[in-house]
Amino acid sequence: MSLPTFLSSEPLSAGTSLSLGEDAAHHLRVLRLDAGARVQLADGMGARGVGTVVRVAKRNATVQVDTCEFLDSLPPVHLIVPIADRERMLWLGEKATELGATSWRPVMFKRSRSVSPRGEGPTFQQKLRARMTSALEQSGGAWLPTPFPDGTVETAIAAAPEGIRVVLEKGGVPMASILGGDSTIPVTIVLGPEGGLEESELATFAAAGFRPASLGSSLLRFETAGVAALAVARALRG
Image (cartoon, rainbow, N blue to C red; front, side, top):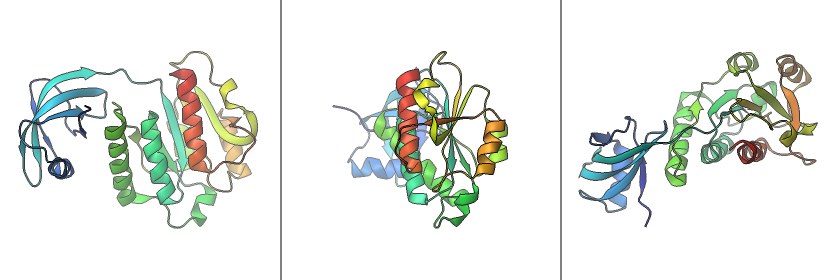
């Protein structure tokens, strides 16, 4: 039987005790788990372990870490996502976590401004973190995507690592044809907003070395394109 998994905000180390927050304590009570129960643990930074519940209180729980291992990170695949409909962004955040995205960088594109309600600001970022945490716990992953604050096209380009840079665009070359070769080379994928990127934005990305890449003949919603692009990248690069 698989054990329930909880994300720790503290680094994992065998033989130590750690404190889980109020949400985890509530989840333990819902599962009717008390002192002596065995649980899986992750810290979102590559460590996974198994522990024993020592105490469950209203606002926290204490767990003894019994065993711990560190999993290598996946080959880097970074996402530049549009600030868009907040529920669709939250859904993509879940799937990006399950598929092992390395980072998540939201951008206010020109066509993002017409969307309401938008997923932006500190409150939304907290909700996104919670959804990513839940997805990591459910999927058994070891690494959370690194989330970055809302930014502009220019800040996203400046922060993108050197490597393979693609912007999803109908009419581009097949994405799979770009992603071959050395899997240690970072990949950065740009998802446009509803209605697509404007010509000036495409030109800015092109000037920074981003190649137009296609996922097929259909016009995809940004969240569908994000899942498909990550799946292709993980299938080809591990």
